[in-house]
Image (cartoon, rainbow over all chains, first blue to last red):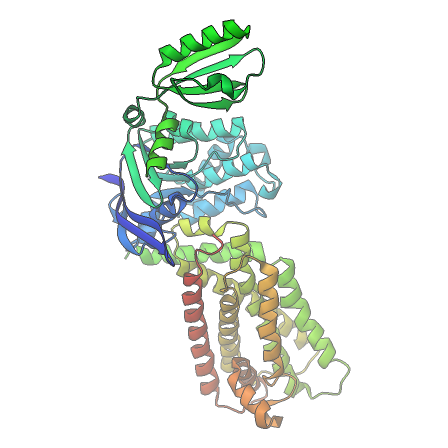
Length: 305
Length: 249
């Protein structure tokens, strides 16, 4: 049985079609990445999958249960982490978790035990009684995640869970996603972070202008665009973009203190850079080549669509 | 069939959450508790009024203000704090949320008004002549006033102050046309027509039937109007809130 199945989902807001005939199948136990540029329809699709919005047409099944016919039964299978850290600021972390546990009908003893376990895991044990409004963004997100997984859901849906978080909180979130998946939960992850999707997900789906434009494993998506590779180079002093205006370099982008050069012939570009640096007496501090990236695939897919 | 117990549990949990979070919010205390007391001091205290005539009206006003003050705050507050979407993702429906908000308003109204009534027993000698009508007035009054509160929360806004201002624009005129400050029997012309249009009139009348034994309408009519008004307000709130669901998520 598929953990999530969406058939021909359509959602319109006035004259705007936010989601246009979206079909999705997420097999049980998979980490599924859902990518798309801003305004592509990611959050609307997520809201349709979680039953927050009702589609104009189409159906969503969670573990085989139609969410719009049996919303409560379907929602019992799910844990949801919406885009913002949506926890009650006037309640403590513990009270937020109590509320979540009660919503999912957990018996008191099991709830208390699970709350202790989650607060400890999220590093919030000592702050359990403090109002959440006094927490940092990362801490609030940890509470939000704990609320969503308190009942050990079969399907966990996360909307931009690491957006704007510090490194520690981001790692904790990713670790939790992996752990939940290891325990058998299916993960549906909406993200802007291509690298995150690349390392976490078995399948990546790209949506643009409300329509699914690509769906495959990250490696296969990358191979679709394997004609383009990149060379990253940094110098001991600043150089102008003009330096890269030569045949063979398709595009040059500054990346921090480095330049990323896109090419279909890395050998030619490497030779050119080394030669030109010697000629101009510029020191090369680092030089790396990399294969096609998911980011490149994403950009090309969404630009083509 | 599994949906019914799940739905009931959702309503109970949401009601408890609302009671914990919103009863002590300043707008609720201001418009739910202080305003009716100010009104009482402004219009009743220091004037030689017939308590038997005016106490039921005061009780109705208290119940009206308290029960209708919680509802308008909850949805805008939750939308502003971005907790509404989380709430919807739990095993609840939007109907459960509306009924949870309604229940929180009704419990607040019935609790505070009962306290006021119990406290007043020591100072005012107004007997309850019909306990059944009195209980019905409390139950149906809180239900209809809390339903009005939920309806007032329905406009598409995530700004609690705006909703509170809007709700007072609706609530204040109602207390002046509903036989609270001028008994219904003394009203004439346009005032009387307006009074007939206000559901609060029928609550005041039911309290009169319960306490003084004198009412303009039959208590059956009062009860029927209050039930009908409650149902209509809840259904309209449901339609508007569903339409405005996506705004403010």
